[in-house]
Image (cartoon, rainbow, N blue to C red):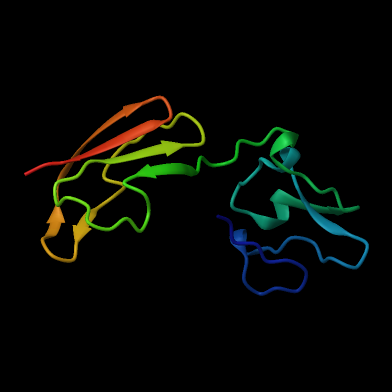
Length: 124
C-alpha cells in the first residue's frame, strides 16, 4: 500500500508530491514500478501511459485458493482443523491470524506450513 499525492496536492509521502498529470500523461513509478523511497517526487515521473501487470515481472501477493471447511460451511465441529491452500508457496511468520468462535470465544492454534498449504490446528 502506498500514499501518493500528485500535482498540487498538499499531502504526500516525503512532503513533495509526484508531478502533475493530464489526459495524456501518467505517473510512472521508478525502477519499473518497484521503487518506493517514501518520497513521491523521487518515486514518480510523468510520461506516456504504460500499463503493467504481473506478467511484467512483479510478484503478486498470494491469495487463498481453497479452504477446508469451505467458507460459509455449517455444522463444523468446534475443534475442526482449518486447511488453507494458497495460490503459491507461502511463509508464515508471527501471529497473523486469530481464531474466534461466536459460541466459544478465541482459540489458540498451532500452525504448520508446507509449500502452498497452511494448516491451522486448534489448540487447547
